Length: 374
Image 1 (cartoon, rainbow, N blue to C red):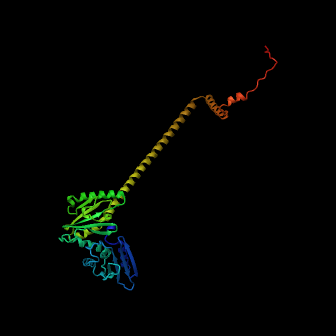
Image 2: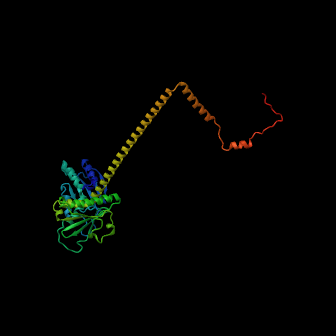
Image 3: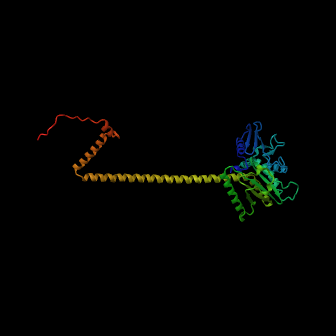
């Protein structure tokens, strides 16, 4: 999944093109990514061996507990990628948090080349992860200074904040979930309920306990209303010292930072799968009905044709059985009836009464008489 990759795909592509060019190229390119991340790539034709990469990324939190800038531990992680290739320039370029000088002439050959370039493209993820690591590494701390249990708001992606709440011997990560479409809300809530059921099983006993609630948990009392108004409820994870030991720390931090992306990917994939199955099922039903209608029409046409043939055969049999004068007489009578219908007078209602009254012929009388001769 591209949304969960640590390395920036666009930055990785540009660095690979510069490496495969095998010569210095004049370039001054700004690259912007989702989350208000900016990269500035500079290369000069006069400097054959070096290029410069500046990175600007927003703060993960505005809280005082998370210091601004790049910590010493984070710088060590960046230079550990490949000390011969990556060098941190201090101070960084104005407007950026980190500036690196890269020497591609010292890149290892073979598959290690792609590996180092991919790790350089993931420096922004290292910077953000290190800030959350600094918090989780102190999970066993027994400090009780004022404000210890106040929720810390973290923003890895715009409009998708989550909260880290410090408690004795553990941290609680709370994610307010918001979806605009109702189908997405239904799929997401079903997914969270299944996640709780699976997380409570013995097979996943070592995983962080998960809890989903439609209302804000008590740990978020006093937070802004806009951060607590959701459509998908609240998902909480309990992070203990077991989940941040050794290499587990990096995996836990990256999972928390990309939990929103994972949920959205799962919801959209499930919705598209359901729609695809429904569309396929509908097409199958329409095809079935279409075939059935065609068969019914064909059967009806065959029945009508057979009935016409049978009726024609019966008529021919009847006519053939009759003598010739009788057949001619019937045809003459039918023809004469047709002529009479054509030449028949138009009947006007009441015209007979009018004719008898007004068009009556006068009668004449004669003085002369007639005698019948015998």
